[in-house]
Image (tube, rainbow, N blue to C red; front, side, top):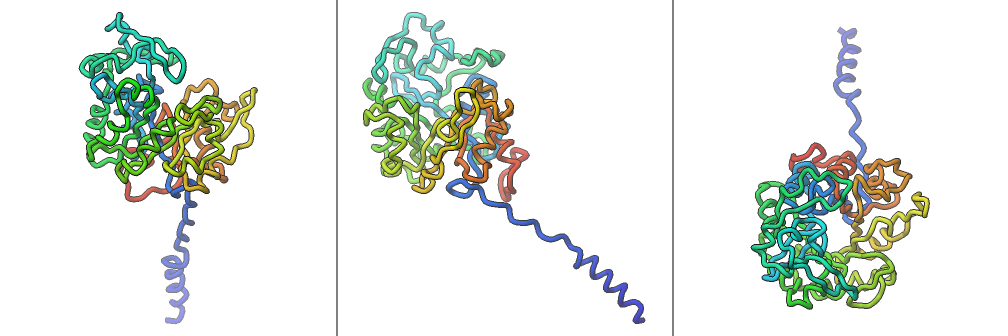
Amino acid sequence: MGARYPLVFLILLILHGTKAAPDPPVPGWLTLSGHRPLVIARGGLSGVVPESSQLAYSMAMGGSLCEVVLFCDLQFSSDGVGFCHGSLRLDNSSNIAEMFADRGSTYQVNGRDVQGWFSLDFKSEELHRVLLLQNVLSRSNTFDRTQELLSLDNVVQSVLAQKGELHVIWVNIEYNSFFLEHGLSGEDYILGLPKEFPVTRVSSPEFAFLKSLSGKVRSDIKLIFRFLREDLVEPTTKRTYGELLKDLKAIKAFASGILVPKQFIWPQNKDMYLEPSTSLVKDAHALGLEVYASGFANDDPCMSYNYSYDPSAEILQYIDNSDFSVDGVLTDNPPTASGAIGVHGTYQGQCICFSYC
């Protein structure tokens, strides 16, 4: 009988002793929250189809991480309806100049004259008939004139139709002072948004506008200050964005985060090679500010040679460099960013709408 004990021991060893050791814990992200960075779809999948169109937003939701954020640049019609469109001028990316040939205008915007077709010269019912065009000439025009200009309400309806999923909307108001001069208030519009609208972030490059919203918006809406080029002058403080970049404490007083051009974090030299990263992300995180980077696109002609024309490698440079991680990336190609972010870590208890969820 005793001879059987080694066999019993061997069986126990197989069942218990050789059991695989538990996987080591996945290191946390170096974002401010410790959660994975957000993928923010600028006008939906704008790298493929006309930006801010129904198809662009639908493709972004269908081909990206579950919690992809839909970015809407807001322009206002004469009757106060907010439309999602990435440029103040509508004629570069729609057929509005053909439809209303005699209704172009010239306005002074931030101290310079701008000629074109502007949303505030049209009623919402007219803008709904406008068809969108791809405004980057190197991209396919296959979907030109197939998609209508959308109001924010239209985008919300698309999001709410995706029942059980986590998509939310980020509203950017680039030219509040301009619209305010013509009797259209971005503040009134934001404060009047219905509670069921899944808007979680509002951004603007205008200091006074965001400051005026502080303490007034819903508690679940974050205010994000958007930085433009360092040499440009912010219209309400009359300081350059480069100067404001050195005064993040003033921004922290009313905002939860900042949205910056990607070059503010990883500068490039004149030969298009990366220079050492700046301390911006760490400095902002130390103050409790989230940092979102903008300017990502698969076909970016100014992409650093360090990435060997691989847009995924560029995304990883900002989120997985062992020193810091931005809190999100604003991109024309959200599936690419989703792939880069989604292959890192494990994500339990989330919806299954994409292979990385």
